[in-house]
Amino acid sequence: MSETDLSVYLTAGGIILLLAMSAFFSGSETALTATSRARMHKLESDGDKRAAAVSLLTRDRERLIGAILLGNNIVNILASALATSLFLDFFGQKGVAFATIVMTVLVVVFAEVAPKTAAIARPDAIAMAVAPIMRGLVFVFAPVTRIVQVIVRGALHLIGLNVDRDSAVLSVTEELRGAIDLHHVEGRVDKDARDLIRGALDLDEIRLEEIMLHRKSIEMLDLDRPVEKIIDDALKSPHTRLPLYRGDPDNIVGILHAKDLLRAIWDAEGDPNDIDLVSLARKPYFAPETTTLQEQLDAFKRKREHFALVVDEYGAIMGLVTLEDILEEIVGEIEDEYDSPVQGVRPQPDGSINVDGDVSIRDLNRAMDWNLPDDEAVTVAGLVIHEAQSIPDVGQTFSFHGYRFRILRRRRNQITAIKITPIDSAPRA
Image 1: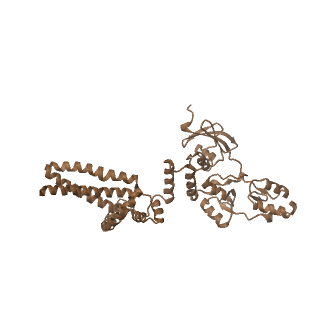
Image 2: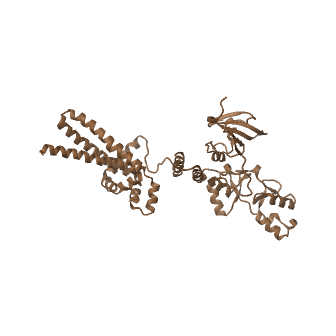
Image 3: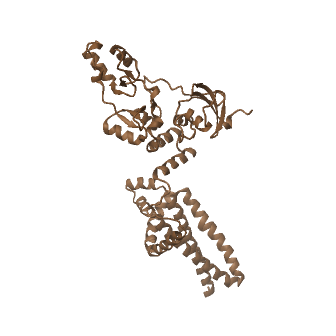
């Protein structure tokens, strides 16, 4: 074998080796950026050292990507230079064009597409396999990548682009919400699991006024009535805690608990005249309507309370909220043997839904897996009034947000029943 032949073989072998290194860098980049940090953290907690190496690398993604791109560009440029030299020896000046075509095909197919496709298919396994080698390369390239980072950040800062690590656009909560919605769309998370996780994430964004039982629906006991009548109403009520008022419903004297009442009836041997309801009543607990569900849940746990009266900025009672109401925002409707079946949402054979006006938008969205906005209104009736900019009459129809709303019933200024039809399934006129 002549020296010329040996040189050709060595050059060709060098090109193949450099392409293999380029494939390694490309696959490593895709695997390490596509792998789940949460999954790696779980494996690291279980004692997996390879997962710990991956977690260490991905903590500083900018440094990692800088090292990978630096290494990848070095081997690609060197491979192209060797190929150009080799083809010039065979084809003269035409070898430059041949080298460009051949290296473009080889780099794109074998050093980019193929390794990245493999890495996307199995990101976790490949990330843990390449992590030990990449740690060494990141350490070796650290001085150069640091200089590159400073230059890049300075250049981007000149055009007004801030790339600081603390300038994240989305909060962790938004990332989790987006991830669970994506997995639900892809069919990997069912609706119940999605609602459960999303409900827990939403506690910091929902205020008491959005889920409270409105004051017109609160069952209260008037202390000006005869004691036996009050006790009879309390025992017939499906609720355990009932507000007591005197004169004005805003003048809450206390909260009567069913257990306290039963003990008093036992001690009084059934004689209502021996029962002092005011002394039995517990101190009422008031909460501002702007309180978030997370704040109220923390307050319930801290104060060991299950029941709060919701007031506005003037101290007027707007409604009430219970611990069960907050938990239902997470796990869905909780019904016991005293709960009445919810009749507010009634699906119809034609695909439409008959909805009571006081049904909350959140409950309707959860029940029907819809996405009606609840920023401007709490109830379905409130949404229609907001969009119509008036109180519509019976028979009027409106279309917005992808649904058709037809007013079925109205009592004075209150919309009591609405027919909602998704526009895609609405019958054509």
